[in-house]
Image (cartoon, rainbow, N blue to C red):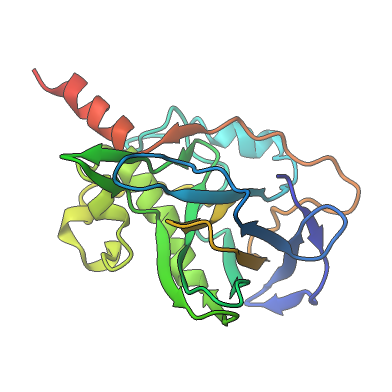
Length: 269
C-alpha cells in the first residue's frame, strides 16, 4: 500500500537544516490495522502445523530527485556496493519509528502471536520464507520480530525505535552483499555495530528504507488484532511536498535466505 503523509507534527530547525516529522497513514487517514481470525487462510500448511501471516506493505512517498542528484548516482568510484549505482536514498536521510498495539480479541482463549517487520529499499525487499526440514516447521527470521503470549482480552503496546529500524536498513544491505547466513545477520539480538560476522559484508553505501512490511504472525487462527502507526523524520528534505507527484521508485527485487543460498551455490566452483 502506498500511504499518505500527514503533517501531524511541526517542522524543527535543527543543526542548520529543516527537519520535518510526519506520520504515515492509510488512504483516508487513521491507523493501520489487520486481524487474524477463524476465516484467515493459512499462509503455510504442513503436517507439522499451520502458519498464519498477514502483512501490510507500507511505502513512503518521496519527492522527485533532481537531475544533479540522479547524475551523481553513477559516480561509484572505488566504493564496494552490491548495486549498479549508488542509492538515491541513503542511510541517515530518514528516521522511522513504529508504534503498535496487539490485542487478543478472544474472550476465552490464549494466543501466541508475533509482530514482524521487514525492510524495503529502492533495490530490494526482504522476504523471509518457511520450509519443512526433517519433518519440522522452520520459519526464517524476520528483520525485526517479537512474540507475545496474550491472555483472553489482553492488549499490549510497544514501540520499535529508530535505531532498531536503522539496523533493518543495515542488515538488508548486508545480506544482499552476499553475507552467507541471512538468518544470523537479521536476528534481532545480533547488532551489526559489534558483530564481526556482519561487519565485513556491510557495503560502503547503505540505502535508506523506502518502506516496511509490517505483519502479524500466529500458529493458530485465534482472533488477534494488530494496529500500528509509522512516523518518519526527514533529515534531508526527501519527502514529497504538497500535491507534487511522488518519485516513481524502481520496483525492488525480493530477496531472502533462499535467494542468498542460491547465489552462494552459483558462486561455488
